[in-house]
Length: 442
Image (tube, rainbow, N blue to C red; front, side):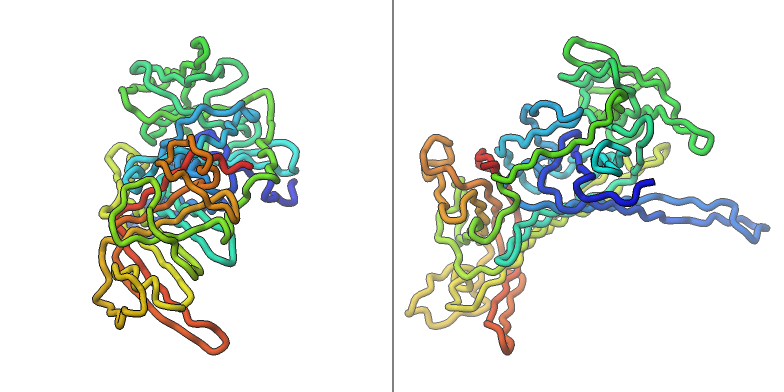
């Protein structure tokens, strides 16, 4: 029996791709019970329950948009060589993502677990997970963070003969056949499950306690690809279906250790983060304005709350739609020095001729931008339009932009033994996260 499971013995994997810089991964299940009664019976006729699984994944923000790209189903870069059956690419850091891309985006998360730090013993499988909140946090005293919350109603552990469970994306070939491109899985692999638009279509597990579907999932050679079929029941696919295939690798039990990158960026700290504010809409690749000074912290929250969509004949939710409009907010804390930020949020230029600042002066069209750099001192950018060709564009990694910001709250505070601070809460209409194509690996 294992005595413990260490942090380096668990490897979060999103849609088959190992996620980097993950600090915490948690999943908890809440069962909503309903006790069914009947006339003439003092007890319960039946107790039913509906599971709801909440997932948290906290990561260090290291200037990469690849984890966010995975969550938004935009990750399309050619992958690096397999790492024991898991994809290990860090991508090309070029995705441009906004809040509307999460409407139908769902991911399958697996978490391979070792009980001794040597071999793989079991795998957690969380299927059809929708992101429900996104948060970015930057503070002078810590490491930049990019945190996620997700929700689903499916959680299962695979162990023993099926301990190495792998997720593959498949595409429609015919009504009864899906194809996994670029993989040869016809030998050494067992088909475990096929989900279509989040619904379990084929499930090979069956037992007295949980009969399941008892499916026969067949993996056959199709040149460089693998065809997936199921005869019990037939897949009944249509063009455009979201198809995920879960298989187990039979011959080996390799734990997907990540390669150490001590010369790379583990997380971004204060010297690598600039905050900019403009009082006009700017569509350029980089906001053309002077950076804000004396900033202590910036926290950006995107509320991606969902409405669960259900249907008769389906035990699980068939989708989870976003509740709109999507609330986007930012909290900015600054050391009180000269009211410069107040003036910027009022579209006024601070100078000695400015005699007063009023809460009624705040405008509703500010643009807040967070720029993340690869170097602590050199913050050069491509001033020619991010064309990737000039010598100057070698440090800017990532940009987070909030557009049409308005002030929804402000406060000023001072206490004995401390210094005065101002805090501004902004609400925004849009958030755009874009990578510059520069790799955060040094």
